[in-house]
Image (cartoon, rainbow, N blue to C red; front, side, top):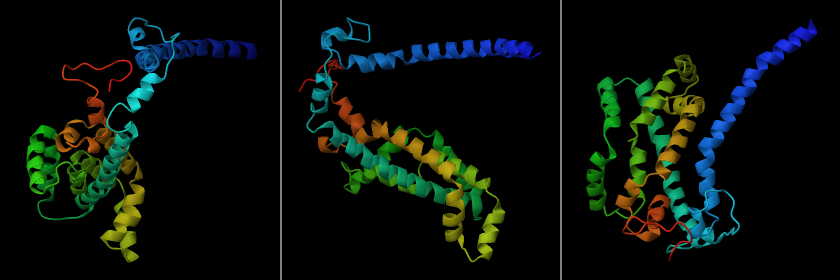
Length: 255
């Protein structure tokens, strides 16, 4: 009997093994371009496209060394600039969006549904619609070529998606916790910091992750507001490797 059960388990497990092997092979095929790109960065220029393999007889790290110092500053300078913008954006979104979400989810005021609907409607606005008035405003404030135009809007809860995300999460937190905290003497500030914020960590973590990705990869806004090469972030600095004819050196960077 035991032998029969063992055979059945082995027979049932074979399709799973085959399925996992198929997924692994498919994953390798999908990740091959990334692996090829990484390995090609250690090849001389004349071998990058002439040799489709991953290995090279003329392995070299000159490409990375010259690329790191090819611009006016070492590349870590632009990484630090991006980190400043990203850190300010994350702090701004976490604070402002959570405060706005608490007001919508827990407070009662006139026109709340209307204002919430208008806020959700801003999600459909492309960045190109708001970038011009933002540029005019910060230009009048003499803040062009600074990081303020990239960070200050985050402090004003302009990312409606994160407000909506946090509102939906806060609505799932029982109101009985608010009432218990109010009995203990907490006002809205105490409820927000002691009850809502600790219990909203999943929504806050999601906000932080997406803010990091979107801000780090943002090229258009940073190109508009940053004109001094010393202020360039990583996306704008990478764009300087491309010349006027949209060509870029695949091997060692050209000074």
